[in-house]
Image (cartoon, rainbow, N blue to C red):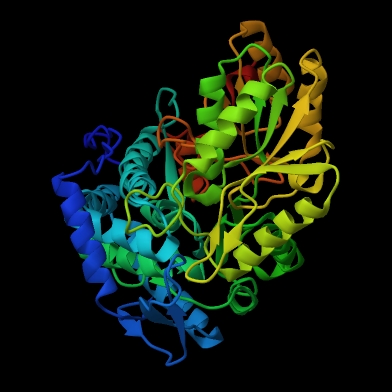
Length: 542
């Protein structure tokens, strides 16, 4: 906690544009070609060892499921135990390493991703998770770089926040890592989240067992290569690939389980919370539970709004990365006076989209993550086609011949509580409800009461009174609220991200509050000239 050291002031990583003929575009295309030319054998990383179980799962691009990118070695319960043991073995040296040394490691990781690993990590995200070049750039380059650099800055601020001291006393706060290990359970949709969840805990002196989504392993393997290259010591972050139940059976019964950093579905998170509660008597400490879960994110449009701006916010907010962002808009409330013009513009805009593989840079929309997601979305679309209270105005088609392609679809529902207005779909399916333009305040309450989630949402209006009404009326409906913008695109250090209600614990990734969850404070009071008698002045005789 040396206050004389100043870490570099973080600045958000510039986004490369991959314009035609640019050096970054040529480099990225070369990285894509190289990645497709080989089949990787991806091990677990436990302590200092690369571990192979011999039981493997194939990795194929969602947009080209006939092509084999690699195989990863599936973990069993013994591997989970080995990862915990390796983490705990590394803990004593890692937690006493000065914070400046830990900071240097993760700042180096950020610079590695910013430079020599940028194209490789972006290519892995494009191929393994079917993200186009821009979506990969803002995720697996810029956002993870920002997480690493800003978190180092937040860490420095935390350690320098010390209490006041009276005369003759020195009060100090020691920000200790948690007593035990942290379990990082990460999703498929953002490589940046997969990198941030284990590193934010590790940065604060914790040791980590990391389980990524099976559909993100390809890029997670590159992240682990970066972390090792940056100097993360063996055992500090252990990367394994068990099933959720196998991992949970070992981890949530282990006495040294100290916390979970989670992004995923609400159902899984609630089950984990229940399991931790049932096993609370088994743990040395009360575990920290930090989770960002689902969303049913909304756009509310007021009668006084610009149609062109609304159209852009809707299609970008709903269909970028195939609607698979936690923050993606999946329900929109449109006033009746704007509907005819906005409907026509939405239809023509969506029809102009090119859909296909990520390697073709002309494609705005790519594939959904896997067959399970494809089948789920196809069923919702088919059900809407059969329902007389719904109309599909654009899209409604899908094809799995070469990849898991769901064409961007807009459903118009007559019932504001129709299934797809309420349930999380996590795909390129948007449901619109047209409301009476004179019933804006009633619609605010409708938006607030429709969903169990409260992750992101936006209000679009040129009327400041309407903006104020929506901002107040929807204060609990979204942890990230946007005015005259789409509800996606949170930037580290600018819009800390997270929601409440069914959307998580709102511990705000990209802010100091998140790092505070990974430390346990010890107050130290030192008295320089201690009293030598129990007597107080008031006890003296008159």
